[in-house]
Image (cartoon, helix red, strand yellow):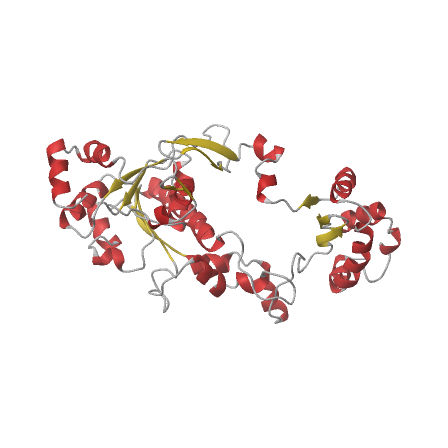
Length: 386
């Protein structure tokens, strides 16, 4: 893959593929590189933000404003399976490197474009960041405290979800090419992806005509399915069916609620969720989080603490699944980051190399992919092409 993407959505997609063995050639502008190299926090002069998103890749620099660099890129496209970019639509065409041009060079090429609003429609040329598409895509309107202001999701889900859909699109396109020999363009819009993950908010709106609003930790259609107040914090409980509801009532000493007409089925419990929460909160306040978790787990009622990051990175399940890994960076030293989430029995993914230094592999890749000599590479540097 020739990866021209930067910051988050595109690099995340490329990293997912790199973790499972794809050969990712990260192409960056000389001197400055990917914008995220300037994002903190820093370990020495190296960005932890950048390093967390660009492991298992090789970096080379190309100045695509120079014709010599464009020519090099086109030569590499002849040997590439995938080109990935997340520029604003039209940018690659200005370089003379859009899909229509590149597919003439390599008809089997998968060209993946991940942008804010996609390569069609009236918003196509609008700039976008994660918070922009979270706002426009509706997820902020259903996130936050009940009757509170709309809230951005804490992780950059506008970017990350688009990165995941881009990865899926690339794999489906590769599967199609395997069957037919045909390459194609994969066009992923961050805004589209936000709409795709709104799930029941959209169906509820079309069914009842009511605009969904933030509900705090409460589920809009399942009750009780939210946080409850223990003596030292909050416990999450998910009683997703009547069987679990009965178990919960018996555990809490509220067997009387099972037959209560306000709460005798999920629909009624949801209609009367505020009254139910008030009753259950009074009981949950009598014990600590750990005490309730122990009893709920023993009874088979789904439950959880609300972990902070320091707790989740040390959680025994996370450790058992190797979801926090350490990689040794040549400048920053040991760095911890999330591991690979998809576990294969035959072809497991792994974190084998740290994020590259800017242009670390430029000479290596030009020799490997294009057979250039040291003298030819030096001449390209003289032209500011690399």
